[in-house]
Image 1: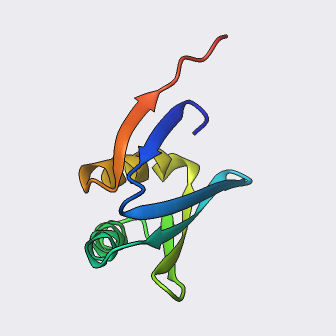
Image 2 (image 1 turned 90 degrees about the vertical axis):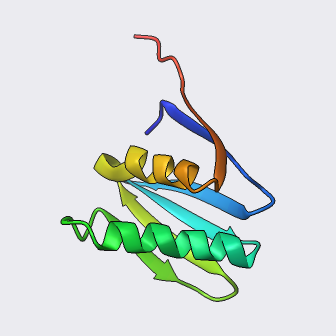
Length: 97
C-alpha cells in the first residue's frame, strides 16, 4: 500500500485515507451525481465478487461513503477508481531497499 500513489479528480470526489492495521479506510465524498453513480458501480463490482469481506462499503449521509479495504484488495480498489475516472493518475513509487 505504501508504494502506490494516486491523484484524485477533485472536481468529482474528495478522499481521506488512513491506515487501520492491515486495512485502509477511505472516507469518500461524491461531489456530483455522476461521481455518486460511479461509486455505486464500484460498490456493485466488489460486492458481486467471491470475496465478500475484502472491501466493505458503508453509505453515510450527504453523498459520503466509508470504504474499508483489506491490504490484498488495495491495488484493485485504486485501479477501479482510476478505470471509472474518479482518480486521474496512479503511480508506483520507487522503494529503496
